[in-house]
Image (cartoon, rainbow, N blue to C red; front, side, top):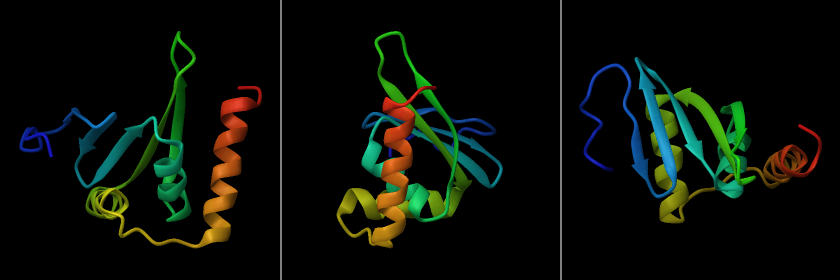
Length: 103
């Protein structure tokens, strides 16, 4: 972690290409990783938005319970993540549709 988690209400952490926004027990997690976003969605978290910048890069914003979201990201980054392959594939296709389809 980047050490900013102790700040109250909203916290923005720029860590490994991701951003976290905390409010109470829910958290939004912003990532440019297609595969991490698909994993989080396959685990039942919600895609709250996707953002395309001027250069055409896309970031996905996923929301959910703070503790669960943190655990899932930690498991993914440590190589210990497991999920349903069919759901993961479906979420990958959905996100790719957002990337390459019409917004």
